[in-house]
Picture: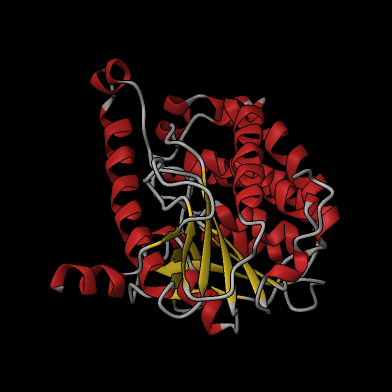
Length: 312
């Protein structure tokens, strides 16, 4: 099946694209979006968390315009020396002054992508999810300037400072919603495409040489992964959840944006080829997060099916 095949009618509506946490690996979501759009699959709403909110906010300005802008955004970030060094990025964030400098650089890139666009009147309905550090709950940002919403949602600890908003202190949405499927369903989604960028992974030799902060980030990623897996299974009891997933990789290697986008597109095309018959019932479809052995149109077992099998 080629990219010109129209698969837009195969999804229960409204259809949500859910773009979760992944830091530098969120670049792969751009390739996934390109594969979906190439088949005519367009979202009715987009929900982003953490660095996935960058991609969600861009799509809200219009799918075609957003995809074009996102590719350039990630390529620009890949050659920005403020981001391409893992060590410098973390060390900058260890002091308030340097953390604010990182935020200024990130905001500049976001402004080039999003301009003065507002989520209130966006062509595509959008929500960016952040974490309120005061209450520990998810905060849905669907009004106001898109740049401000992304700055809060993407404020990953050690990389970017929290954002103060009234009585709330907003930080990385991935802390409480690494895959904001629950928010998408609450907004009315009847089917979901989860753009998953895989677990944090690396070669054994690389893992043995991790610095303290790299080990911490890897552990943080694994914690988010377990949350995302559980959330996917629960929401799939209610609506179809199609998972496009790339292999594991490093979270802070912004220099590999181009190859990440290519990997995302390849994963999307492969899954869409296998979903030629569409989706029409609740369940997990495609490659489940962290399970690269699953593939194609196989509908993954739901929690209820697993329990029924175990008890029989």
